[in-house]
Image (cartoon, rainbow, N blue to C red; front, top):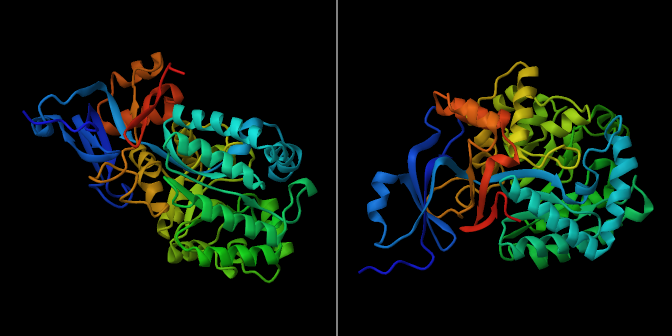
Length: 438
């Protein structure tokens, strides 16, 4: 009798994943109405039709039965701030007063490692409850905030990206580093955490107005010295912010050009928002494989503007979706899809549900240069996946009962779903969340 490997796992459900962008390919996704996902040693072995794959399983393999539910790759959130968990849904008339009134005072507390670890644990609980298995996360200016975050995420075996915020001007003295200390502390964190377990480091200048020319120069030098790290920051989020950057850098062609001058446009660079870009900016992002993190709930909440999907697609910019907690108002990527759909409509374009699910899975992995590691069920990818329950709420159950197509089903999840729709979350083949437990 064949011996079943101790780590072999099999899951029966409807399966959906992507191998291309639905906006540019008619054969972008794989759909198995009665599917089987096979996992071993934390990685995908196979995904396909149950009838074809079940006979390949060793005798005695236990199959976890999720029939009636949908398994998709874990959601990937490419821009959010874990210190802002405590101040989500704080009222303010715009981005800059919101930072001064709520953000900076809240982030001050992250000097305390115990507080940082406590918030990190809650933050990760929320992500997993919402089906997000990977995120690009901003810490505070304090290196101990990043130590606390990675300590918590590694204890759960999660694939996470994070970085210490660098800012040495135009912020309260109690949150200010220096150009030298910001670069030194960031390099120490890179050496401590980058590629340690499933952790990846992101060089994180907060945004142009809070970094001197010297700090921007040193951040760019770090990005060149460690080309396989990430770089994350904000660009062209708010019109007042854009005017401020023009005043600070009158010689620059654009806000994005400031980052370009310091060598920060490159693969694994993730720019939050990207609302007020021009055509040359979008072309430069595409040329350099820099990526945009689209943050619709935050942009609507702060009145920052509407992302232009049509122009970004025309330029072939790498795109992903992000919650931007705590400017964003939900940890849920499903609720983020809801708002992204409406933003697209207000800009005169249409965002199909298949595209939204792509942007939250393989699209985000591609934007992060992680295709082949995350984002779909290709053999060898890390087994991060979620189980979606179309009967999780009375309204979702009633609406999906009449769905006539996959697009209609996904659209119902995107427009009506939230954390309640996530029945279970798996990371590296291990169950890390079950709805109603813990």
